[in-house]
Length: 140
Image 1: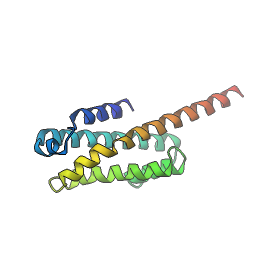
Image 2: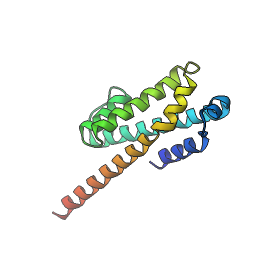
Image 3: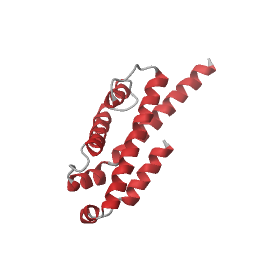
């Protein structure tokens, strides 16, 4: 989770205030895209760790891991949908490199990064709930 926060701080640092600056600076644009990609991959690692630890099964793909967490109340369905969109955008950046509309990418990076923080909050809440439950179980 610390690594995810690190990548988000980097994205915030690299992302210029204006779309024009984003489009003009290839280096900053690629740095933002890479920070976003790493944040997504870290988020997926967290999802897969929880799925594995809890024994929720074997996800068929990255979006399936997110769905598993929603099905098991680790995060709300509404957040899972947003996370799936983040993953979809990550896939677009990776696999359609060079064909991504820079204006759309800037707006997406600028407006959707809050979903990562919502994810982190949901995971923290889940860990806290689990910890309290285990402490109550240990007292018996």
